[in-house]
Image (cartoon, rainbow, N blue to C red; front, side, top):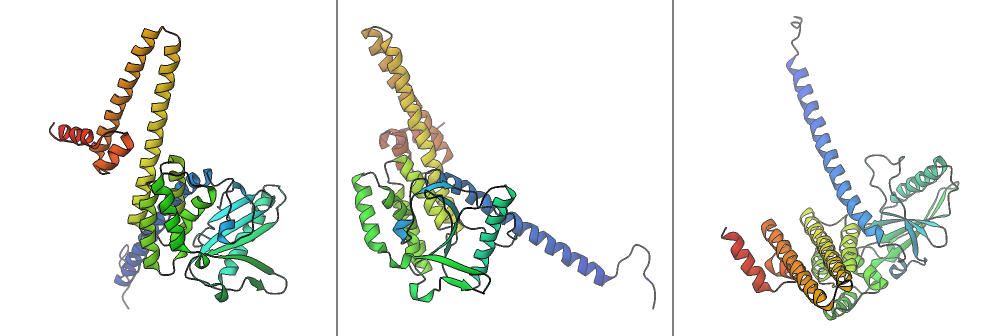
Length: 343
């Protein structure tokens, strides 16, 4: 058998090396995609968590008090290829609830829950803190019925008790009709209605139904007049429906969230401009007050035009939405768009 020339690999070795390189690149791309997905989810989850305090999951059929704090869900001991738990909540009674959402029932998932729980205990131990009483809560989507699920996992030395909530028991159509009525009237939503809003799509059984209801609830959510509630509901829908939502729908919701944030900032700027104008007016005579008010109105109007022009240039939303966010007449926005395109 002839020996290989120095520095020359056999064709089999080259093929193996090439295949290994492709596999490594594939894994890198896969991990990169997972990292990006987690980053997008984390950003939205943090935004959602800011307004989750003070609310409760009780409407889903779980007996629990209000949420005192939303804790970080990263658990160092969880393997890279395992999904992280959806929510870790400190409740007002001092207990901590681990919340996961499932669209199918698997007995082996209980081992995953045990990993979550031991990971949380380890985290408290490493921090030198006493671990509070833990609760494992699983919220099942409309695909799963109560009679299909067992809430216990008992292997002698280890016994796990899972508290289950079944969204299949919610009247999705009735809830949607109620929310539509309130939003169309421009009413402020209470805490219960906001929580119903974000979980509504998951109460339906088939994936096609869920995807359809996601679209419907998002369209309804952008009509909520209270900007803070609108932001909470949109972020909540995106966070809760993470496991079933497609990337295009996720992008549309994130775009709506960004537009809501921009609108909130703009409204704050308008209010601040008015407050400053009023303060300055108090220190001047009546004539100066009138002049300053006029300048304030002109400044606000100019800011509206600038804001509308920026959104027209971006080309992300319709003229109707731009008119709504900028608080301008649609004809004025159309004229700005025409003037802008003619430059």
